[in-house]
Length: 438
Image 1 (cartoon, one colour):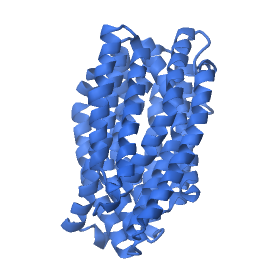
Image 2 (cartoon, one colour; image 1 turned 90 degrees about the vertical axis):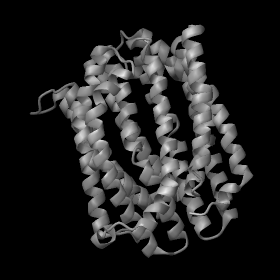
Image 3 (cartoon, rainbow, N blue to C red; image 1 turned 120 degrees about the vertical axis):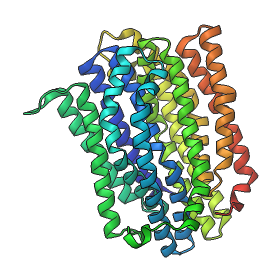
Image 4 (tube, rainbow, N blue to C red; image 1 turned 180 degrees about the horizontal axis):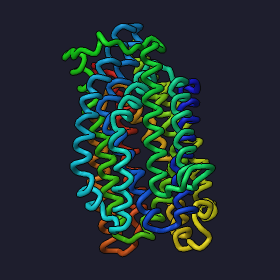
């Protein structure tokens, strides 16, 4: 478990450092509320763009793990190559569709006009590199399914360092480089995606962990594609539904003005540090559940997932305590000294985040285990119930009826997380996920 989780945790920490660096650069060098509001929405949009490829990556990880667990490496290689093929088609569609809908989509999300214009300019740099996002995401997903977290860690370490280095250089204007301000952030992100794609393609063409990119295996094979999509489509819809509902949620917060949007952005970036252990141990649970089920050892699968869940929850609860009692100091680090209103509001949100860490950790790890088993339909149902039945309606009540503002919206989020935690616990202990055929 630790061999799988620790490299991912280190990778996720570095990725969060990228997000926090963007917030720090925006707060310290660009300094205006519209830019802080825009970088918050950009984080959601990048999450959305990356997660569009979960229609492929979830199936790639689950099938690769099953085949490696069953010691069928030729089938694992075929699954990886067919995943890349599906990903290429999907990347072309996403790029074209992105250029068509970017403008109306940004304005639908409720940002004030100056912040919306900044978000659109950022996307002008990112949409052309969507194919690079695909190669990075799908290749790393297959490697993780094979149990190779270390290669993914080194790739993402380089990617994130490139992002930080280029962004800092071009925003601040270090050495001979001019200060490009907002555009520098976008160029840094685009450069990192291209770097990641080149590294992953180089590794897969050479071969790693039994996986190799082979031109002969890139011919469409309907039976393997169907198996990948049988798992990937419900799982992808689950992830996209989470993000879509989060974008709906943040659009309601954006209606409250730039200060509320900026406070939400600072708090959510800090909260992202808290759920890193959940993300890392969730991926470990995905691989372990898939490989043990492939080896026909369901009891080992269940036990390994529980170990991952308990470990992640212990770490996340400790982080939650730090959020609850140290929120003001944490928020102040990313803001200019005069932004006291935003800092205090961010601290209020972080106290709520502290209460959410335990249920969030349970939900993340167990959802990862269900996906590794190929059980992707139940998590999709939980997402719809939690977001559409609880979070969004309660947010409208908190904002429009009770006038609790962004703090009320975050309490709605907390109630949603607790409810989804209870639902996924029930599904895990029911045990039906152990019998899923992939």
